[in-house]
Image 1 (cartoon, rainbow, N blue to C red):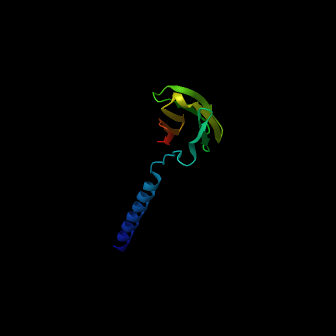
Image 2 (cartoon, one colour):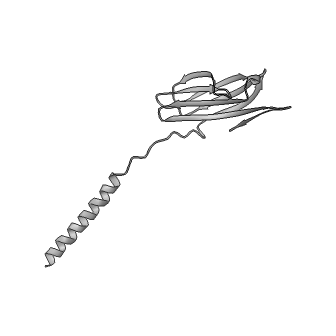
Image 3 (cartoon, rainbow, N blue to C red):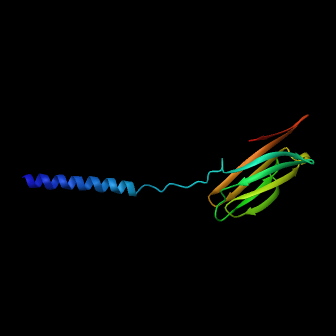
Length: 130
């Protein structure tokens, strides 16, 4: 009688541990997203000779690269280029009179970056990040 209870108890423990181990191995793999908030950004640097000056700073570019598009207020692409390498920095100058909004969008495999700036023409020029 003792041996039947002992075997039954061992069987329950083995089934329990097998179930627990199976649960830990059957979890879905976590997806990897590229964080862009602190590592990749566009900064408005000021106005230079009638041009809006922006610095693009990408410190985490995907291995296969990405495509950067700079668009105006209606979504027309005014500039496009392919970016490769681990990091990328570049200064862009846009005529200040032609824009009320500028959007920087970069896309690659597993990588998306989007930052826009609104240009308000008042007595002073005000540029704000969205």
